Length: 240
Image (cartoon, rainbow, N blue to C red; front, side, top):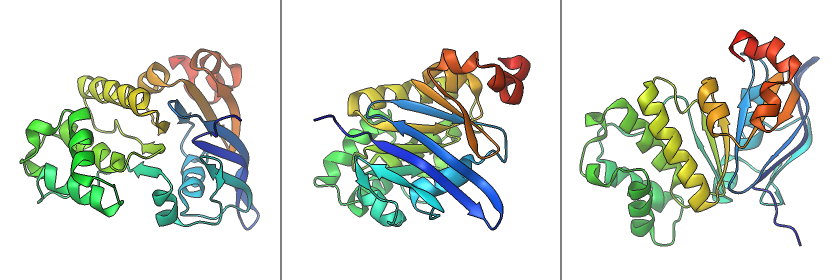
C-alpha cells in the first residue's frame, strides 16, 4: 500500500460569481518534499492557499491531508490534522519570551510532551540560547525563525509558508533556507513554499508549480520549470 501524500489538491476551483479566481488546480506535496508555488500577483496563489487551509470553501475539487479528505473542514480542524501555516507578517508575541510562547503554542496544539516538543523545535532552529529573550529583543531574522518555530510545534505533516524570506537580508535568507531544508528532511514534513525570491525557490525546492490567471501553467522539477517557455515569458522573463 502506497504512503499517502502530505497534501493532495485535486481539481480545485474557486469562483466569485462569474469570475474564475482559480480553475482546475491539481498538485501534490509529498512528505519530505519542498514544493515552490510561484506566479505573478493576482495569479490565484492566495486563493488556493485559502482553499488548502480551510479559510475558503472551493467551488469544486478536493483537498486531502495524509489521504484524508478535509475539504469540508475548517481551519482549526485542519491544524489538528497536521496542517501548519506561517504568514508573511510574523505572528510572534512581542512581549513574551521566546521559550514561553513556543511552549504555549505546543500546549495549544495538544503536543503529547509539549515541553520536549518546544525544546526540540527551538534546538532545530538555533533558538535555544535565546529561550529567555523577549521576542521584541530579537533581530528580524531571528523573529522569522521564531515564527517558523510556532508553526512547527506539534510536528505537523504539512507546513505552508507564505513569503518566509520577506524583509530578510540575503545572508538571513540563506540561513533560513538551510534550516528549512534540514527540517524538511529530518522531520519528513511536506512544505508548500510561496515565495517571490526566485533564488530561494529554485535553490531549495524539489518541485515547482507556476500559476497564471488562476491556472497551473507548469509543474515539475526546478530545472524543467525554469526552462519552460511559457514560464519564462509570463513570469521569470529575463531573470530566468
